[in-house]
Length: 157
Image (cartoon, rainbow, N blue to C red; front, side, top):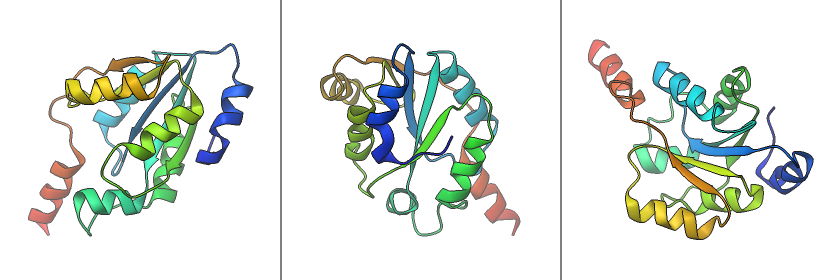
């Protein structure tokens, strides 16, 4: 179900008694690596909530040609997946995790899921900023990258 970031505290109240997992990502050009990651995430709790990076945030991080798919369409794609319960756009365009952490603080999930490329120092930051949440790092998934797909398409054009 598509919600807004401002609805997260209310969602936490509505889901009382359920275990909530939260993760973030771009999810541009949805591919098998995303599906495997989301399947794994969905097994970590009763409810899976996904924060999607805004178009502005993705452009800041990856350049003006990204995202390929707009935030509205990325929301729609994730909303169609059975393993995702709620999704929203993370507010802000900064490169730091401020928006993602603010969303986690509002939601107060039981589990925060980070990708395998997060450093120990960043994981410690999550533990401090989202007290009470268990921080889990997903297993690596080699060979799947939206950037690599975009690069292959660019070579063929």
